[in-house]
Amino acid sequence: MKLSEEGSPARPVYVPGHGLLRDRVAVVTAAAGTGIGGACARRMLEEGARVVVSDAHERRLADSVAGLAREFGGAVTGVPCDVTSEEQVQGLFAAAEERLGPVDVVVNNAGLGGTARLVEMTDEQWGRVLDVTLGGTMRCTRAALARMQPRGRGVIVNNASVIGWRAQEGQAHYAAAKAGVMALTRCAAVEAAPHGVRVNAVAPSLALHPHLAKVTTRELLAELTGQEAFGRSAEPWEVANVIVFLASDYSSYMTGEVVSVSSRHP
Image 1 (tube, one colour):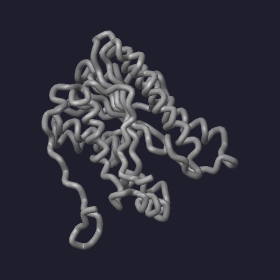
Image 2 (cartoon, helix red, strand yellow):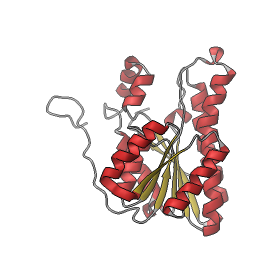
Image 3 (cartoon, helix red, strand yellow):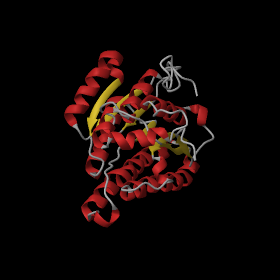
Image 4 (cartoon, helix red, strand yellow):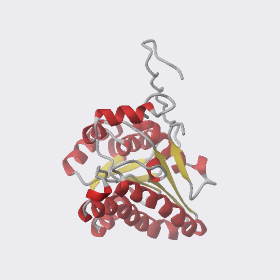
């Protein structure tokens, strides 16, 4: 493992854009703020895409779009959307097409976590996490396929999690939802392949950002970080880089895959 002069894990070097998504139209859900969705929107803009940034938090969405627009101008626009609402999901795709044209790439990043032991978990806690994380991914995938398949092209990338493979205390609802996203990805890929549409997913382990730091403990973050082979968490843009790869023509023969974005050792 490469260390900095101070002896801590060296930070990665940010990779500049190479036009991998030039002239593509992309929709990224839950993209306001500093997490994976926000990093993904920025990376896609840097790769030449025109991007619809979507989020349920309208104020945070407006701030994010304003910041990106100062750098990328009219290549970015924002559309509020609660992915638990079919009406709002349909409105998102209609607005995206009206403003930027037919959608080429969809990144389903919206998800909801939480911590509760199963014996204490309420139906409301279970249902809410499943509805946002799995149900929202299904609704957006369904809406995207309905538009992409008749055109014979398009790419969908879902954000799963390594927790869909690994057990973690207090995460039964989130783990079940993310495992469901993985299964949904594989089934959707089989259905979409004859129409020229690809569906893949990423499964990050630990990508640290301010929002995550607010909803978990420092002790747990330190424990999880210690399990990573590089001795550090991922930068959100490192996950976004893999999403960009899956959205680009470099992954043209990949579909139904769940790609781990993790340095965690067994």
